[in-house]
Length: 235
Length: 382
Image 1 (cartoon, rainbow over the protein chains, first blue to last red):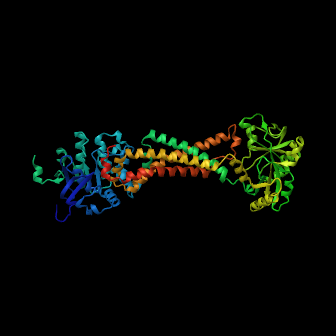
Image 2 (image 1 turned 60 degrees about the horizontal axis):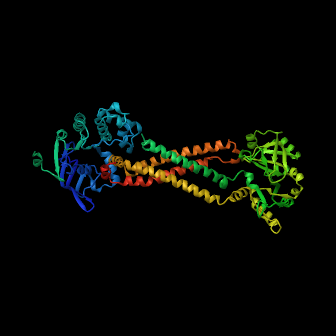
Image 3 (image 1 turned 90 degrees about the horizontal axis):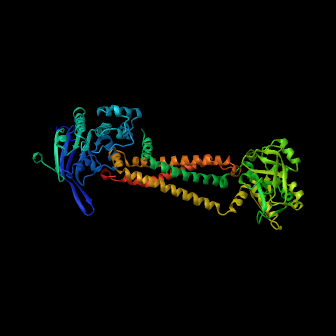
């Protein structure tokens, strides 16, 4: 990270404790990290290690119990729900493992969804949607419903939806988890291209080493704690 | 795509469930619209401008008690009274007892009746012919059309209250602003057959100079006969009709109870559909929130979806009600339905009721879904 450019994500002693009935579950414990802008980071770790929790907090859909989390200069804890929603719409693109497309909407309409919250005209929205779908190679599938697409194509639509507002950060939670290897490779190549050619910061949660190999940096979480690079490198 | 378009698409996501809900709401709204139509006709419709000037005087005790015929002259002498006409229910049978052959038959004084009903449109030569013809009658144009009567036709009406059969010539056909579904004949016909009737009348129709005179004249008439053996009750023609209807019981409370039950039923149907629909999409709602949709937009989307369904049901219900009333008005017993129709006011009110049901039914499940934390929603397996 250069001295002149502040990290796009900065976490300091971030902890997250879930309370269920009378039990407390530590999802994250004292996590501190800096992610520079333009990074392609893979967050790895076994199930329950806190990868998705950390990702959700970066997206401001979850709040740390303690510590300080700053994303693109915004202190996540200080945002109200409404401010967080607006901020997320403008700054964050989110890709889910299970695509989560709206089944009654066409590919183009699914991609258009985040733009409905902007002041763009109908024509401008259409242009943005066409560009986003072209970027993921689905310009010819605009009017298809999700059920008419393959899993790989659905995930590419979901990526188009994530990048249609031109966010600085794209968060991907196991984006290849539900895909066959060929579709997974296509999706990972798109993410790598978005990072390489368009300068998007990509933070990807995965437990697949092949997926992580596309990232420039890999961090490991275990039992809610960030492992030192040396420990993570151990087999 | 717009948010409204998105809501509409969501509303038809489960086509079978939405269709059944829309049909349930349509049937309920059909009933509600019919109730509103009857309510309007009974309690709101003020009739024609001259209706406000018209009074009906009857025996204070009951309609079944008659009034002395000389009251007519005394009423006519009161200041503010323009015309008075007797109106006597004959209650005879035309052809048979089938509902389509039932209509009002009133004995009256032809010249006076035409004065108290200045809003009847009748060709002058027909009016003049009726005034001169003791065995003549005039008929409402809608009734004439339903029975295919023409001027010159003969109507045979067998008395069921009075032992006399009338052989009436149709002297004229009148057009009234509101359906009358009645015929008027010269009371002299009955009086000659039954001389005791010459000194008695059922009611008097009184036309006052202006609507402002109506209350004063009504009070004056009743005051004039208060201490007589046959005291009177004078009220507007509208109140007279309502009194007649209220003989059946508390119609207002009965109609309100049915309307409330109907609204409550559609509220439950719609709320159940919305609750199911929202429950199935908790994860999807969390996805929308992840994309940046604020709580208000989610609420608007879900409530918009509920309103789309109830409004569609409402539109179908109102359309069916209009169709039913139109069909019934043109059916065999159509003349009995009078002025029952879906007015723009009733149409709007029915749709407002449908929209309100949509909002109310969608509010609670939508609020719950919109308030759920995103992370919890994303974990939901539905």
